[in-house]
Image (cartoon, rainbow, N blue to C red; front, side, top):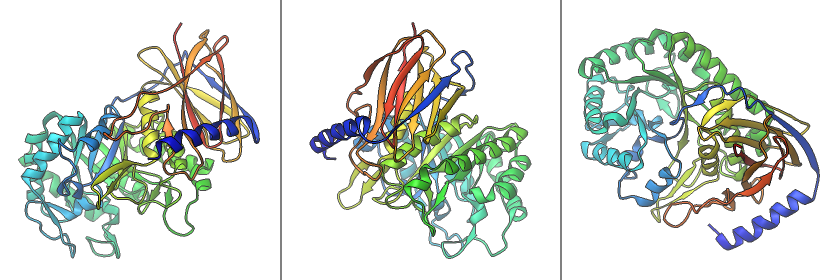
Length: 469
């Protein structure tokens, strides 16, 4: 980070954006007397490739990495991704033509010691592609003993609808389809459940393209075997025509996300099961440089988290690649052995602040690309998240909470430009040298008869917290 330059430049940027250039207006109307769905306490989470277990990241003495998770409060850590089919319990057998990394008891012990240190829950993925359910059953048996109550489910396989996707994936032959998967999964679940009666199981962990032909039928066919169901989603893809900041923040991209969530919730509710978006991020195939790894992604992520929560989804896991490229919220430099945070991480801090309690119906009117979400916390505070995804206009926003409240604070998600990679903060907080965040800084704000006014720079977000009377 560049702390001194960060503070100087960021302060100057806020002033020039707030008080110069084009400014539009927005109106946000919050139905504070109509609390709706409760956001689960463990709604937010991260997803990692299973190979990260063998790469020695998840250690209880890895203090910086531990603190990055603790900063986010309660959460669910998913171990899975493409590498789940390239990891095998102890044996290291091959999945098709692909070499596989063995996962050892010592690595699992260390992983759950890490989980105990951050006090998160776990979705633990096991290999399905290797067609060795006996071995997966043994792994689940061992992981169950070590993980105990931290385990919310064992996820069987990863993206089976892409088991044949050359050249990257060749776990099955061309033409592999749901009926074949159904038989394989049924056989695997029978073996796994015989060895581990009562173990919580989940799947199918399919991609968005498999929602109709894989997710919907799988949810129905395995509703008695699964504790909840999972799938994946990325609103844009890192291939021509490559996504831009404009497309990531566009209303059409948001609409695509909400449509997907609503469709999957229909299938899940029909089966009487919760659904978790267990792997997602801004751009599939690793992310797009200059889009997925910049400040605009944090603005997108803040909106996306609430859009998904408002559909009644059980939770969400942003996929994390422990390297220096891509969409990852937490980066890792293999040469130096050091971790750092990327812009998306700050949207998680924003959601930790405002994404709890009951969802309040919220309507937004603006000629600019402004959205808003609201919650009512157990502390009776109303939190209104206003997100200005417009790249050209600041937005002077009037928030009507439909109460008599008059006191509150504002916490801002800000960066010096949509393409900035480092000079970013939420509520004035940045990550320190030990992985902890410094105390938040908020702006006091006074309202009148439940109405408050705040101005948001272009491409920014803010949480208006309104105190009870």
